[in-house]
Amino acid sequence: MTVPLYADPSANRAREFFRTKPRALVDKVASVKDAVTNLVSDGDYLAVGGFGADRLPSAICHEIVRQNKQNLTLAGHTATHDFQILAAGNLTGRGKLIARVDSAYIVGLEARGLSPHARRVMESGEVESTEWSNYSLAVRFKAAAMGLPFLPMRSMLGTDTLKRSPAKEIVCPFTGEKLLAVPACYPDVGVIHVHESDRYGNCRIRGTSVADIDLARASKKLIVTCERLIPSDEIRSDPTRTVVPFYCVDAVCEVPFGSYPGNMPYEYFSDEVHIRHWLEIEADEAKYKKFIDTYIHGVRDFAEYLQLCGGLPRLQELRQEEFLLNRGK
Amino acid sequence: MPDPYNPMELMICCAARLLENGRTVAVGTGAPCAAAMLAQRTTAPDLVVFFESGGVGPLLPTMPISVGDSRTFYRGIMATSMADVMETCQRGMMDYTFLGGAQIDAFGNLNSTMIGKDYARPKVRLPGSGGANDLASFCWRILVVTNHDQRRFVEKLDFLTTPGYLTGPGAREGAGLPPGTGPYRVITDLAIMGYHEETKRMEVLSLHPGITMEQVQAHTGFAISPKEPLLTTAPPSEKELHILRDEVDPFRYIIGRA
Image 1 (cartoon, chains in turn yellow, cyan):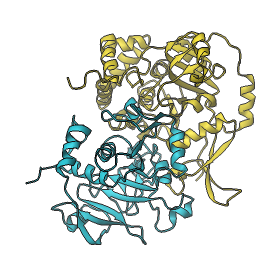
Image 2 (tube, each protein chain N blue to C red; image 1 turned 90 degrees about the vertical axis):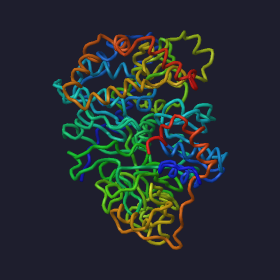
Image 3 (tube, each protein chain N blue to C red; image 1 turned 135 degrees about the vertical axis):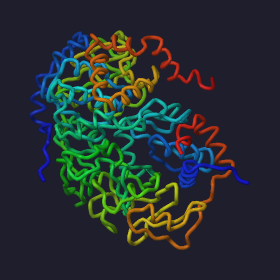
Image 4 (cartoon, chains in turn orange, cyan; image 1 turned 60 degrees about the horizontal axis):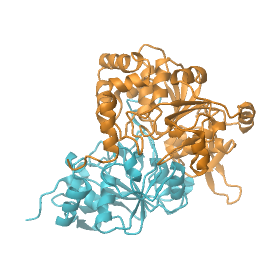
């Protein structure tokens, strides 16, 4: 069984691209709409940062659906709510947004359950897929961040996950032991949500980084959304806190509460009520289409979506939840 | 008269008792997380808890909802990357992990990818490996906490997502997985299972109070034998129940499900 490789692992071809990537320290602040219009193309390989709904660049995912992008390949790395949002572009009468997925974790929202619509999409047969694990996809980003065509690692061996993956068994040239070689993944577009960025794209993240630090470096083009734009002087006052440097970044969008309805560490907790509502409404296809029309296609931007979801009063509640302020009441 | 308890409370207590002090454990949300929290408050105060998203050594204030939410590194010792946590496992420093799945077979292999025969058009598409395949490959001892029924304990998996003992003795090592790792215990609402030293097949170590070997076999889709002497699981102690209900899961997110 030959399993297709959706992303070109060639380090030399990646170098040719990175040779042309702009390095100038220029203002990259853009609207979410313009960033997606200019940087996400039909047919692209897309990688989304965060861990499921946690520190998720939700606004970009919504905008990709709103702009009706087609035939994307997705890195299904811890893809919970991000996959759920993007799946709104499949089987809803607007063509096929997701065409292929490198799947490590898709369709589910962890303990909250499976997404009925994401299941419909994957069970329909209209999306091709290959299988990975969360770490193997993280290693694929790491290989790309290192400028290599592959890296060795030691999981997936012996399983159907490997049989449905284009990763290959190799023999260690030093010890003679069996290893797994996973191909580098250089996404056409990466999207991450961070706490703070300056106008040039120097980024700070608080809490766990998941795979974002490698994903940011691996991506040919990178869109950053941030909770807050900060002065560049602030970045220079403490460079130890910069986790993504400006020369990896192509657009910076300030999106307060940009991880909603997911959790943003030290900012606001996840809106479990909204996530449950989204999951439940998916069971009924007609109601779900109306929901997508209202919450994604029917709004101009993410701020309008936040307004629909309860606006500032609801977001204040989620801030208090994040800091456990109302426990015991 | 001891306190009445529900099956989930017993399962969490059984899991907690297996975690030795001064060890490391990679957990997800739900029962495994509750077990680690209970262990820390009873027999294993120096148990170090890891989450695959990058949280290390949190002082969990409440149950996380997501394996990556901010609770997973609340007052922790480090908030790092997924690769750092997984590489700690790959280096051989993770003693335990808890995994689950829609199906488990006699060798402890797990399916969390799909139900059905056609990969391209599955009857039910499930999430896939997530971090499970990695943790099962790298951690020294794999624990599974799950309900015991014939649809879950099957002769043949629809898809082998995550490695147990694969096809039996020597198969993990033959496939290239790190030697000395593998399935350790399965804790269900009926019994505690281990794996036969030579055949690597699942066997019953301990029956929960009131449960018979016949009941376990009736709920298992493959032939399963007891390991002699067959033990009876100790019910939750008053102290365990008190800590579980009042400190670990006061809102009954997990124990309320039983």
